[in-house]
Length: 475
Ligand code: UDP
Image 1: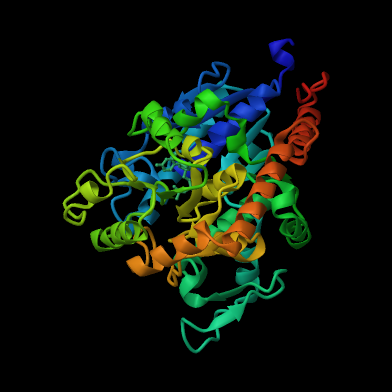
Image 2: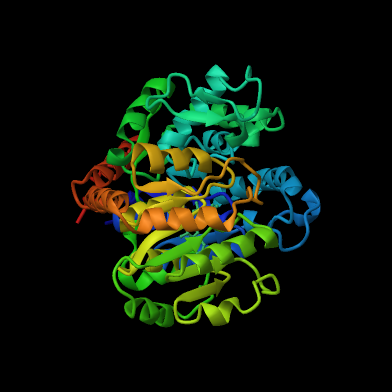
C-alpha cells in the first residue's frame, strides 16, 4: 500500500508501566493491521516501549525531554515507578503537563490522523483539536472500575456515613457492589484532585471515545452501562497482552531480573497448578514489616512459590528463610517476566495487587487470584474478580493506601492460599478461570469481539481521515 494512503496513529502513553506496556501492545495490534504507528515517550521510558514492541521495526518511537528543571523534579524520576514518595505525585503530574509544547511540535513534524493519549493527559484533546485530528482516551483500567468511579462521583454514597468502615452499596451500579469509605481512592474522597478529574472528564467529552484494554464478554454488563451512563463510544480491544508471541512474552516492559530459561526450567520441574506467583506490580511498595509477614505466610503455607520483591537488599528477610525454602521457593529481586510465568501450567494461583494489567494477564492465562489491592482503582478490580467473576478470593485488605499498602498478617495469606489452591471451592474457581481464559483468547482471534472492535475503530479512523483504501483485515 502507498505510504501516503496509510492510516497514521500516534500513541502517547502515561509515564508508568501500567500504561506504557499496554500501549506498546496496542501499537503492535494496530501495526499488524497495517496502521503506521508512532509512540511518543521520554528517554528513560524508551526501553520499556522497546521491550514491549519487541522486534516490530515498523513502529516508530519518538522521544522528548523530561522537564526536570522546570518541574523541580529530581533527575531520573521519569515515571511513576521512580516517584520517591506519594507527596510527589501531584508534582509529577504537573511535570507531565509540561510536555504539551513538545508533543505539539512532534504532531507538527509528523502529521498523523489520530492521537491516542492516556487519560492523565487531559490537555491532549486540545492538542489534537489544534491539528484537527480526533483524540482517543486510554484510561488503562477496566470498564467496571470506570463505571464504579463515575457512580461514586455522581451519587456520593460515601458522604453521609458515620464511620469509615460502614458499608454502602454503590448506587445505580449493577451488581449490588458494597464498599466502605476506607476502600475508596483518595481522589474519590478529597478535593485534592477535583480540578484534574474535571479536566479529564471534559477532555473525554471532547474526544472521539475511549479505548479499553478489556474484552466485551468480561465486563459486558458494565460495557453496556458505560455507554448508557456516558453516552460515549468505547472500543474493547483486549486483552492486549495476548498479541505477544511466545518468544516475546518474557521481554515485556523492563528487562527481567532473572534468566527466563532458568525460571522456565524451574517451573517445568513442578507439577501442574502447584506454584503460587506473588507480585504487586511496578508501584506498590510494602514496608519491611509487611514483607516479613509475606515471607512467613509463604513459609508456613509450605508449598511452592515465586515471589517478586522490588528491593535491592534483603536484611529484612527472616533469618534462614532462603535456606528453609530452597527448592520450593524462588525470590525474583526486581522485575519478573510476568506473562511468561503466569502462562506456565505449573502456576496455580497469583497473589496480586489487582493492577488492571496484572488482573487481565491472569484472566488471559486462566490463573485464579488471591486479591490484595493497594491503591488506584484496585479495590474495584478486587470486587470484579472475587464477587462478579468468581475467579479469586480476597486476602482481606481493608484500607486503600497510596503506594504503601495496608498491613496483612501471615496467617491471612496462608489461609487465602489454602483456599485458592485446594478443595471444592478452589476447583470451581479454577474451572471458571479456565473458561474465561478461553473466552479471552477467542475475543482476540479474527471475528472475535475484540478483533471486531479493532476493525471498527480502524474503519472509523480511515473514514474520518478521508482515506480511500479499505483497512487491512484481520488475518
Ligand atoms: N510486570 C512485570 N514484571 C514485574 C512486575 C510487573 O512484567 O515484575 C508487568 C505486569 O505484567 C503488568 C505491568 O507490569 O503488565 C504492571 O501493571 P499493573 O496494571 O498490573 O500494575 P501497576 O504496576 O500499574 O500498579
